[in-house]
Amino acid sequence: MREQARPWRVRLVNLFEVLDPDTLFRRATGVSPEDLYNKRLARGWTLGLAQELALFQLLIRAGHKTITNRLRRHWLKTQPDLVVSLVPNFNRSMYESLRSALPSSGYVTVLTDFADYHSHFWIEPNQIQHFICGTAKAAQQARVTASKQATIHKTSGMILGPQFYSDLEIDRATEMRKNGLEPDRPTGLVLFGGQGSKIMSTIAEELSDVQLVLMCGHNARLASRLGTMKAAAPRLIVNFTTNVPYFMSLSDFFVGKPGPGSISEAVQKRLPVIVTRNAYTMPQERYNTVWVLEQGVGVVLKSFKAVRQGVAEVTKRLHELRENTKRVRNRALFEVPDILERIL
Image (tube, rainbow, N blue to C red; front, side, top):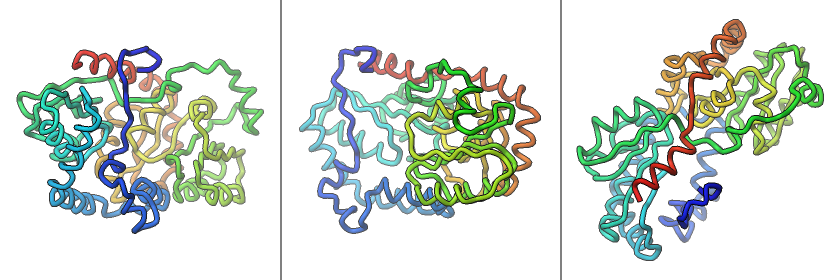
C-alpha cells in the first residue's frame, strides 16, 4: 500500500497489546503469547491443539464482555474508517465492539488460511461484513456460513511478501558453488518457520545423501546440532534471514510443515512441496495438504520418517510438478489493496 502511494493512513495493531496492555500474560508466564506459540512449534508440541483451541475459544466467549469493552475503547480512541482483521477467533469481539463504537466504519476479515477450520474460527455467521478469501474452498465456506448480507471477495491466493514477486537476476550455478553446493545435484530446501523445528534433525538424518539447504531461523541450537551431523552430500545451514527467496532460488523442492505461508511461498518460487498430514498437523492447516494434492504441486506424507520416499517421488516428477506450480498465479498482494479501496 505504501509503494502504491495509497491515500490512506494505515496503522498496524497487535491485538494482544490492546487486550493486555499491562502485559499480564508475559509477567505471569515469562513469555508473550506469540513467543509461547513459536516455541511450541519449534519443539513439535502440536498434538492435541484441536482440543486446546476449543478451550481457548471457550475462554474467549467467557471473556467476551471484557474483550469487547477494551476494544470499544480502542476504536473510540483511534477512530478507524476501516478495520482489517488478519487474526482468527476474535472476529466476533472485534466486529461487535466496532459496531457499538463506530457503526459507520467498515469491517473486513482476511483469511490467512487456505480454509476455515470451523464456525467461529475465521467466519462468523451473523456479521454484516466483508470476507477476503484466498481459495475457492474458503469462499465456498463463507457463502455457506456467513450472513447472507455479508460480502465475499475471492483472491488468487495468500498474501506474500513483495520479495517473492521479484525475479532474482543471479547465476544459479555460481551462487550454489559460492555456498558450497553442487549445481548438478537436486537440492531440497528445509524450512519450518522462523524458529526451525527439531524434526529437521530427523529429516537431515533420513536425507544424509541429499543436498540440502537447512534454514534454522533463530534456533541457534538446532543449527549447531545440524552442523555436527555427518552427511554424504553438501549441506548449507542458514541462520535467520529475511532473504528466503534467494535460498529458494538455489533449490529444487521444499520440505516443511503445511503452513499457508510456507506452501504459498514455495509454490510462488516454483518449488514442489513435501509436507505431512498426521495427528500433529495443526487443525487449521489440514486442508492445506488437500490443496497441495488438488493442485498437483507436491506430495503429502504421513510422517517425515518417509521423507526419502517423498524426495524420490518429487525428483522423479520434478518437471510435471514444476509445471503445475506455474499454473498457480497468486496475485493476492496486489488484489487486496484494490478490494480495500472499493470497500472504502
